[in-house]
Image (tube, rainbow, N blue to C red; front, side):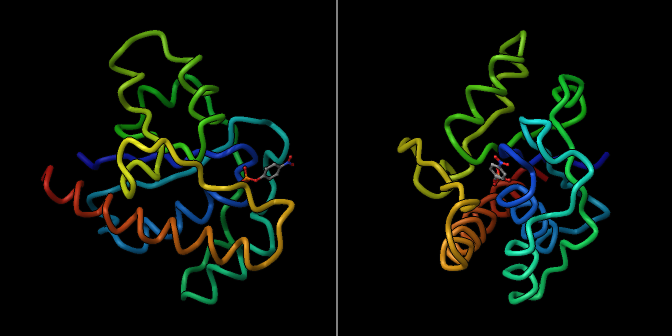
Length: 154
Ligand code: 4NP
């Protein structure tokens, strides 16, 4: 059975599509499934933000075919790890969990890089290209640590 990982942000057009593309690029697709969604319904069916598409492309990752989806409570059953981008996403997802097993699947992604700091991946939506570059770099480093953690499980 594959290990399934879900990346979550607010709109599913800026941060979580990057997190999905980056982590997928580092893992064997026969062993791992990586997907993303948003807590909101704002952009359902939409493509990633052009600035996320462009920064991913700059680093050799194609996220063009991703389409935004909204988190659904069934996702607690589907996924083994649910990585959220910020504390607001964390609260929104935890609210929907009705047991500790599901709550324990939810992890702030920057905890993998800076444990016990509860840091946010800043929302770059109202920022410029530099903001997207910063987000890419922090997600890339966090995903390197996620790969190490996942490989220790198998
Ligand atoms: P994301 O960024 O959560 O990283 O996809 C956002 C994208 C759109 C909006 C907010 C955040 N919005 O309000 O439309």
